[in-house]
Image (tube, rainbow, N blue to C red; front, side, top):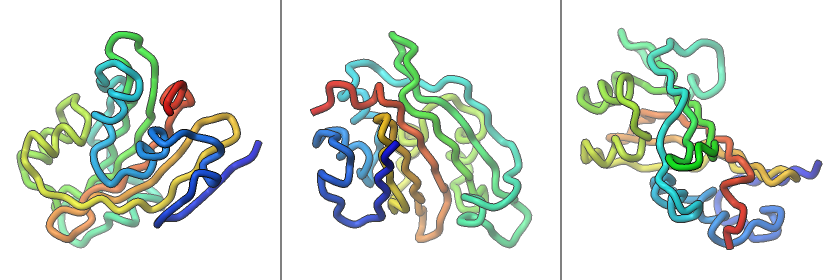
Length: 171
């Protein structure tokens, strides 16, 4: 299995194992991926097997959101699936830094069943996304990690695994 790993900025097409331009845009965007994925796969994206509020343990993304203060990082895991087909397109694990989040957003992130990008938009939270890593495996699956800054502080650290179904037919 060939695995191509890259760090931003500016990967070229060869580094993505033959993925088309639309698939490369989904993997490297610093915006909300859900609306782009909906266009790519032709159906509405919803969450499934959502779990929230578990305390973050061990290393990994929790380190990017570690803080001093009373609020420990929390973990939210979900799958982004096609509403019609039930196809799993993305599996995601997010470490939240609760004290870096506005209270209404924090409540929804730990209780609601919407994708994170929709919640950020719902609450009109200005944020900046920083792509940390992106890779494509020989089987057509892909993985990326990124951080979401709110108010200049890392508020979310997200790991996403994309199934090959995301990119089937994506030019």
